[in-house]
Length: 472
Image 1 (spheres, helix red, strand yellow):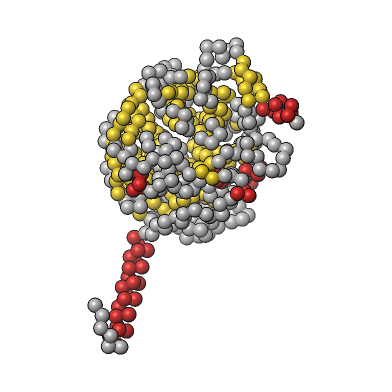
Image 2 (cartoon, rainbow, N blue to C red):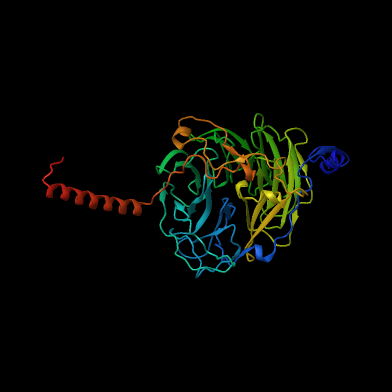
């Protein structure tokens, strides 16, 4: 059995990005060497969407452990929110949608600590927070569109940007902290519970292309059309350091922190228009640790990095290939796992489903939702082949839980904590344990409750008067 295990885990892997890469092979182990993804069956896909035509550097689709959301064409900034467990055909005339903006929705972001809360960024310069009701069901169990009431009342509106809001990103460890960036060349940090601005950075040289928090949420990195990556102190709204011209080309640069390793990844194009990936040491950004040439396709490369397994899913907008690499915090840093996933159907946008939403008993280590222009949403399931039906703890380390490590007020005051984690083993499920989420209420709901309270007070006061009881 030990011999079989070694044969399964050991493989000859070409070390990429090194001078010897063309002639040298390195023997190493990886639990994810044989991960595979089969094309989804038609009945597993989500179809019928007429997509928003607004283009930009957003991912076009986002997901929580329960829902996914994407922007639709039409007035009022319509947004489709689908349930991950209900594939089928969406009908814009029947199925439930979110609508409430006066301009097109550009970006969407789910709250990592509340699967039913999402934020929408719009051309109308506002950000709206929405709460998806438990009975939300745009498609029925048979996969057919289901008639329902549209969600038109937001939980709260955040106003502060002067031009269209282009990107959103929730904080990684603190509850109710949201970063946003806009065509007004600012990056703002918000306390969404209070609806207040925590800080604002007003010196972006051009449109922001990407916006990412580090693991603890102490730093915020942005890439910009002016070819400068800024590492910001989000509490103060200042840039602590910069990285100029990480790539020689002029196309979109995407970025990602590689866990808590102190390394940083960028994707962009070279002077000869070849797509490439670079890894940097945050302590010394004078030159990259490694540069990996990918291909000469034109779409931006999206780095979807799994902090738990150190696996990088490199997907390109406009093509059908997802490449898999494993990051190791030592030379040569990146190891190609296999041929990844290949399809003739190009992707308009992609996102990862949080680990809490995966089917771990089927050894599903990642699920990527691929948005296409005309064929809907394709769920791509990446699976590690195992014969045992038991929970495989070696390929499922503890993942980030839905419990925040601290509040927005604590974080803004200087608190710094690692993310709270949980086991993915179903037998150790928390079953809702942990702090109760604070319920957001809309202005309309609060106004109605206030009127009801006033009526109740008037009624009780009258009762006291009728019984000749004095009160103050």
